[in-house]
Image 1 (cartoon, rainbow, N blue to C red):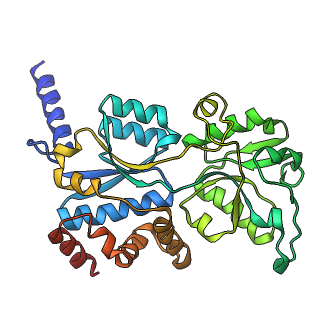
Image 2 (image 1 turned 135 degrees about the vertical axis):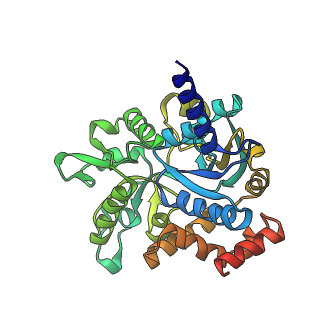
Image 3 (image 1 turned 90 degrees about the vertical axis):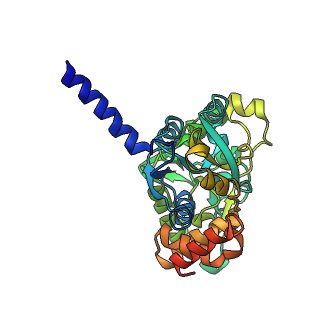
Length: 330
């Protein structure tokens, strides 16, 4: 019995040691990676500052939106650099109300999301010899008139709408929206296995000048690089949205949030995160850099910090900024 007690105590001590020191500070800051490029870029920017400016070890923990948000609530994740709050509003507000997480800043709030089509589908493209295939297409509801334009390659009697990946919170929203508008009766809603699979389907269609309709959002290198049109929807109304999803997406503050213990565990970093603020345009610069240079998000983060030294150095004290610049050779 004593041996078991010793084993349990030692195991608990190991767990505590992995989480932090006895004084409540952290040995390592863990950031959420929900597997899209913009969150990877923002993570890398934060990690550069946390490591080279404040001396912390850092890591990321990957998973679906639901899993990473739960990880933040449980304390397995310390920082979430890009929380799309209205995609998980109920869970997010509950976690804040229970004081499991703290919203520290708005990363950006000038973003769009919804169903997009290549603009040439509506307007054509004379230079590429593409005629408009859906000239009256303006709204999500108008898709009912064009299922044959967006034909499912595996089901000729149905159109196809590309959804967000199945692990993303928005996936269920698109399904509900399609059901409310009756689009599910004439369109198959295809859930790709990953963001890269969704982008691959768009890129292939775009290169060939073929029709495509699917969910996407900004800021992304996709919306910055391709000429896409966001289909209109009914003006946002909170009650209607909650009941049917039959409006445009709600305004979506994309926030930086931390676990409840983080302000005490890393107070200086917490103060830095309170100042973290970018925009869709600024984020898309890094995403386009990834595309144009076949770069990793971590490389794009360093490039972005070189380009916007005047911005991020305002988030931190001068000595911290100098340490980061010296380490990154900026």
